[in-house]
Image (tube, rainbow, N blue to C red; front, top):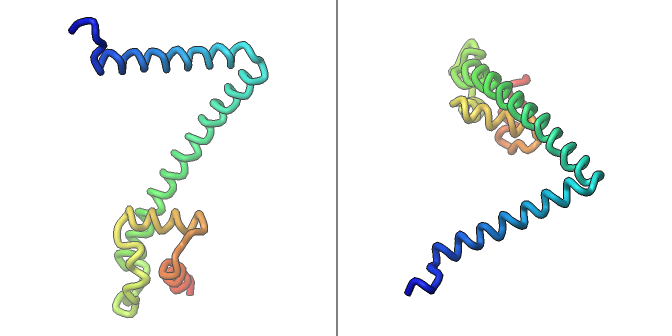
Length: 122
């Protein structure tokens, strides 16, 4: 019974084999100079992309808070009764405002969001 490999031992053996393949790949990358330069450059660029993502999230969060307070809560409008609910809906909560602003920023807004923003700009 001990001579047979259990399923757990077989999985460990497969993981070790995969690990050896990754080590072989790392050795290949280090031995081919242009490939090494490419990989290190891509990793350096990923750091910059990460910081751009962080900055974008911080700006969207700040603008989402402002849009929720000003538009969603009606502070921007002197007479809130005249404002249709379709304008206020995309800005009711901070996550909704962030999502709406992200969609506008990326150019993927829906017809309702376009109408709400167009009405705000008038």
